[in-house]
Each structure stands twice: as structure tokens, then as C-alpha cells.
Length: 172
Image (cartoon, rainbow, N blue to C red):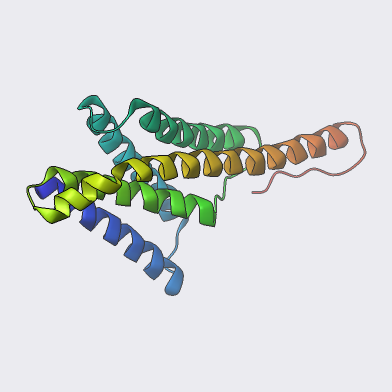
């Protein structure tokens, strides 16, 4: 029960934090980096534990973890090679994160002895796993295409600069 309550609190507080930051412009570079990383670590940890316990299909966990690993690794490589990464989550990415948290809350709710609530939660889990997989693949693909295109353009600018056909300045 405590884990279920904590997951709901984490999901609601994350949404509220994001809303307040945008609404009152309480944003910082540190917060913009740490908030999504904290989300990814929380979700990854819970997905790993529930997968090891047999509550989440391995294929679902692999999609979730591979997507997040690809995004974090890609952002790190982009920053090393080109410039500071200013990732603005897309609607698809936000929907994916929300679906991950809702799915985990449903899973936890299905494990509680809450009668009809647990039965309803258990009954809708399988379709949620499929929706989560589609959102995970779609948003992961979206990030790879978007940031791959940016990296390609940055590389092209550097080549032009090296050959004297333009100016390339790395943002400070």
C-alpha cells in the first residue's frame, strides 16, 4: 500500500512541479536536466523490480528501458560532440511518461486487496502494456529522428566551416 501511495504522490507531484515551473517561469538549467532524469530513474527502477518479480512482461520493460537509455545516451553524445542539449519534451514523450506512471499505479493497485478496484486494475493492464509499448517505440523514434537530424545539420555546418564555406561557432 505504501509503494502505491508513493507512486501516486510521485506522479502527481511531478505533474504539479512541471505545471508550476511553466506557469510561473520557475525554470533552471539544473531543474530542466534533473527532473527528466529523476523521472527516468524512478520509472526504470520500478519497471526493473516488477519485471524481475514477474508482474511486467520482459518485452515491455525492454522497450521502456531501451527508449530511456537511448535518449540519455544520445543526449550525452550530442552534448560531447556539438552543444548543450536543450530537450523540450514532445507531447508524445509526455504522454509516454504519463502512461508509464499510470500503468505502474494500475499494476500496484491490482496487487492490493481492494476488491473491485483491484479487479478493474488487473483487467485493463494488458491493453495498457500494449499502448505503453507503442508510445515507447513512437516517442523513442521521434527523439532519434529529431536529434539525429540536428546532429547531421551540426556535422554539416562543421564540415563547411573546415572547408572555408561558412562560419561555425559553438554556442557558449
